[in-house]
Amino acid sequence: MPLSGARRWFSSNEEPGFHAHTPVFVAQSAYLRLVEHAVSDLESEVGGILVGNWLLDAESRRQFIVIETALPARFTRQGSVYLTFTQDSLVNLNAEMDEYFPDEQIVGWYHTHPGMGVFLSSYDAWLHHHFFREPWQVALVIDPNSATGGFFIRQSDGVLDTGRYFGFYEMDGNSGQSFVRWNNLQQELEAIDKKGADLNE
Ligand SMILES: [Zn+2]
Image (tube, rainbow, N blue to C red):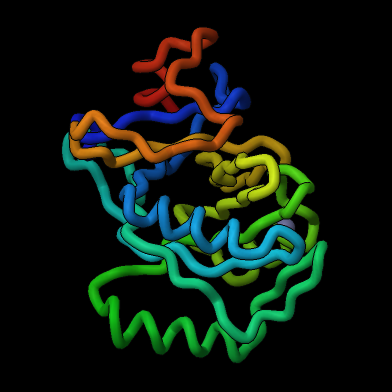
């Protein structure tokens, strides 16, 4: 796991007993792409897929994902309170994956909730279980109006909590520069032992 070149952002949901089964690492360029797409429409939901790799840490035997980029979905049907991937949008995204990212995987999806906060609706959860079935695939929700965001990640037993989200690792390459501006995430969580939270299930 590229822990040494990354800084961890925590959500306040993270506490003993609630750990991400699949830690998420996000390239800074991917974070910037996600934010740029999210703020492009402050009224209607926008979304797309998260592209990167699912990996296994040889030493700890823990799986994790690295998000390298984001692909905005076209041909979505969207309104102020919903976004859905149509068959056409999924076909199109798969074609783009084959053409531009043959060595990478769809590690999840993202969408915005303008002014509504960070959660998964029952429809979002249905969509996640239907189209993003791998246990390590994640859902990112961003509220561009309040500059908040979080990852929904399945637990080791496969359960997905639709109300409690996780933070992530920003891959800053030890540059000392962070681009993360989401108000609901913080770099330290006093309630938990950081190392324990990262390494325990
Ligand atoms: Zn939603």
